[in-house]
Image (cartoon, rainbow, N blue to C red; front, top):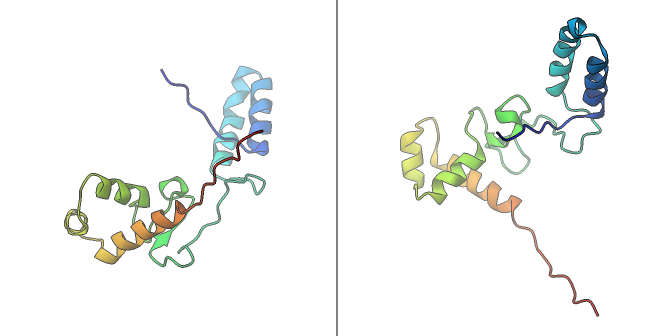
Length: 131
């Protein structure tokens, strides 16, 4: 069995420690608060993302913390950019995708692929040899 790893903000960690210090019968009350805090990333969390109804430069891509756990998706849909990239990697054409998901347009697929390409367009420089 693979353990589940949770990413916690400092406030969530504080609540968890407080819950563990309580007698067993009182833990349920704070558990509800703790679970609610997991849905609200703290500003200090470097991975916290504001809600973007569209990513600047990509009008068809949205990032909303409550949709697909905040992964980039097509605006107005629960279809992640990563899923579209995987479909193309498995050999699906834009036409195949639009046929399978009639709510999408060919430009949705193209913009998702462009967005994914731009996210991975990073120069990697080799380390200089150590003398």
